[in-house]
Length: 248
Ligand code: NAP
Image 1 (cartoon, rainbow, N blue to C red):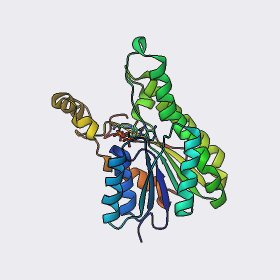
Image 2 (tube, rainbow, N blue to C red; image 1 turned 90 degrees about the vertical axis):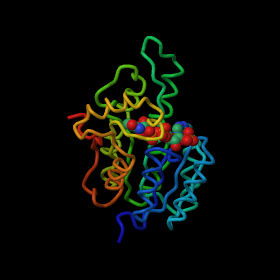
Image 3 (cartoon, helix red, strand yellow; image 1 turned 90 degrees about the horizontal axis):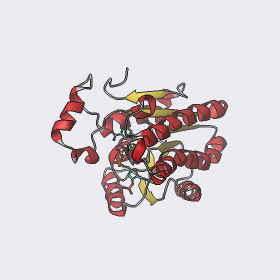
Image 4 (spheres, helix red, strand yellow; image 1 turned 30 degrees about the vertical axis):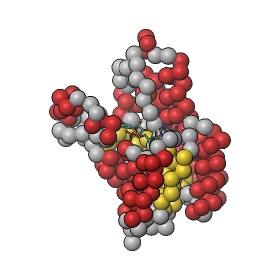
């Protein structure tokens, strides 16, 4: 028996990076996986094929998580295809870094819509299905930056702190219906995106972390697996860091 046998998961923003890692881990542990992405059709197709080759039932949906109506259409399409949604992972997120002095209104608004409003959109959309089932696990991707703040990321930090307040409120509202909601706060996770950074800079970041390495997408996916599974049946309203001890 695998940890997610019989469960259907919807993961936003899984064409690459952490979302892709969560999709692969969920499939390995028996879940049926629906995932969304904004524009990377080729990467989404490749991921579908890769995970299907491992025996998984996986389907990618092009859907902008920042758009309220698209979120409802996505959930309807997933429920239509797979019957229900047991786990929602609000993972889609972007950065538009700038010092506050130079930050434009567009940079602020875009971050709020993609990172924070998307959590509202998808959680609202999936609620009816989870309420009917009297069960569900919602996992929202925050960041250590949402806990600690970071110069040059006031928009991103505000969106990730907002996710924490949202997650705790959802946990309080829906706990009586056996719907849990938790937030994951990753630290420095090495993805395709960080491969492009200067080696020396990355090495300095690694040295500053107690475990002396950046995290992998699998490190984050393993926590999502735990929170999505019944192993965490009595855990809700929590923010759990996956950061090698960066924030203590
Ligand atoms: P990433 O590699 O840039 O991947 C982002 C994913 O989100 C892509 O699949 C992208 O789809 C999708 N996406 C972006 N905007 C979207 C939208 N409006 N609607 C639907 N999908 C959208 O990012 P990552 O590093 O894996 O980060 C994943 C999450 O973890 C984010 O919420 C991020 O803030 C958080 N996080 C990351 C780190 C880190 O060190 N990497 C640390 C803390 C927190 P397309 O390919 O189609 O654009």
